[in-house]
Image (tube, rainbow, N blue to C red; front, side):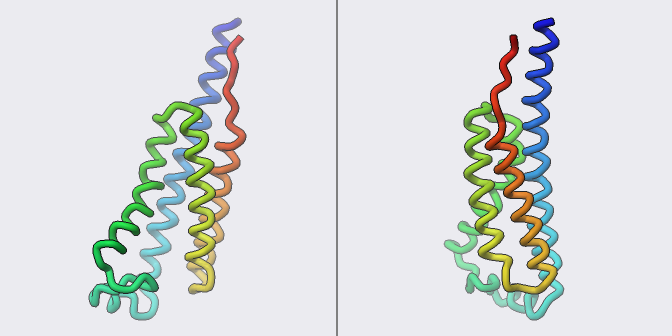
Length: 142
């Protein structure tokens, strides 16, 4: 009987990790497709060819490093959600989920309607990450 409870606890733990990793992967796809679709609007490609990175201005080393970090974190959260110990995992997901919900709200609103739509979905997915991580409790096997 205790083996069943222990296996059940491990299954819940694994399922939570898989849900978080899947949500981070979905968030990354949303970022990629929103930016890809943006290539078809206005002078985006022309500005890129001139080294201008949208509202951030010239694509210098500082801007490129900042934007790289902005995309490295959710990319790494896919695997970190599966690999990190539960307690660290939980709080990193809460912290970064909140941060990326805020970033989506601050950066996507006021743009093209399709971009706003992506922003709304990004906020929902980010907040779902926060909710799942925050409600993640340690399962106790008896």
